[in-house]
Length: 51
Image (cartoon, rainbow, N blue to C red; front, side, top):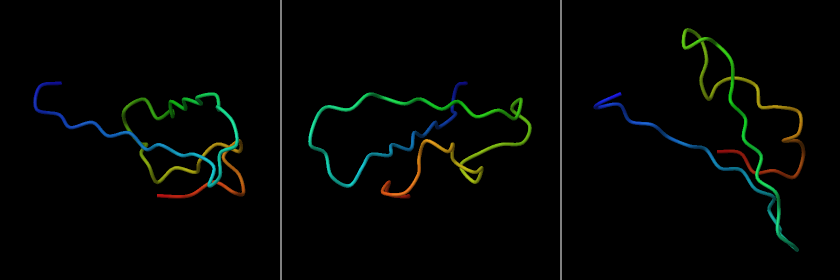
């Protein structure tokens, strides 16, 4: 992985009244066909900001 840039998208609710758990989603694709253009998981519904 030398010379490879990795990035991480972080999503959180617009308002935060308490500490929140961390949700990690590792998408499929077998390193052939995937990326940030894939549909986000259903848990990331209304009220979550989008990048």
